[in-house]
Image 1 (cartoon, rainbow, N blue to C red):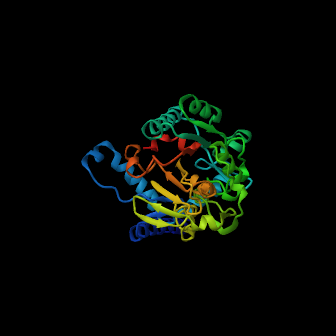
Image 2: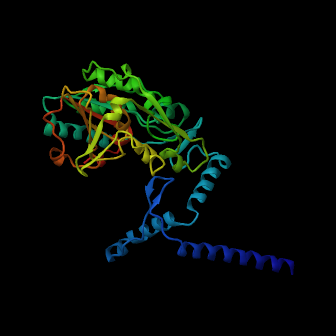
Image 3: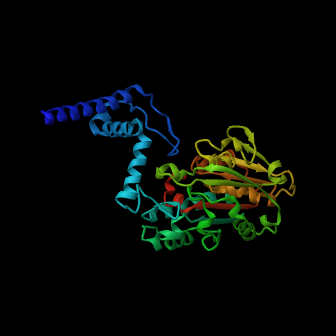
Length: 367
């Protein structure tokens, strides 16, 4: 009798829990963004007969149900804790943690993508940059400093440099691998911390023939916390957050930022972006196809154009003292063929291509 009651109770609990989750998922409104993962969630797939026959419709619905499942973040945290603490797995969905620092495995090396990146640099050069002072530099991802020593899969960084150097023409290479270290990067984010890269700014300015140093000027250090970097939400574990640091002075504060596409003016540091979807968007308002930073304190007319990813958003303010204007171009968001409609290449003397290894290994995103 007791066994029968027990079986009934277990069955009822199963039905209640299952139906409860089903009804909750039906009632709950779909989310648009995952703030913890910093990405847009999948919406209800559109129907087409072609997708039904090919099976793509079912795959899209699977992604939709996974993204919109109730208590999704709680289950992600439970999975991450189980993988790390119970099963002692070295990584969870490509993320691993060492000494409180979150790393993301970037593997394998895609040599075709690296070659494509080199060809993209050459394409931009041939269209717009002939007879200019052009340099390029590569920012290693955090795995470069740790992965191979700790037994994690990692790209062949020497091979990356070899491919780039053999296939990029008419440009000076600026080495950052030997000057950066893991302490220059945030623990919970992919990016470097601005207060740690003044020497990097000095090196870039020097290699481009600029006599001015970023380190020659005084900065006021501003600190905002807690800063939960892009890897924090992906790791789904309770870790100590970072403190976001930005450096300012009267020159930086007086600089004017202009978006020629949206026709909007702004400041170098947009503090209202902190606590948003990505707090790192505090620097130059985050991803933009094209923006310019004009420095009214420097009237020689010398200009710099940076082809960049998000890393340049925090180093550009440190370079501004050497130029009357810096233009930043992100080829992930604008096609190479129409750059001339938004960027005046005739006035720029110095050109810098600045990309991190993760972008180069996925360079087909460059348009």
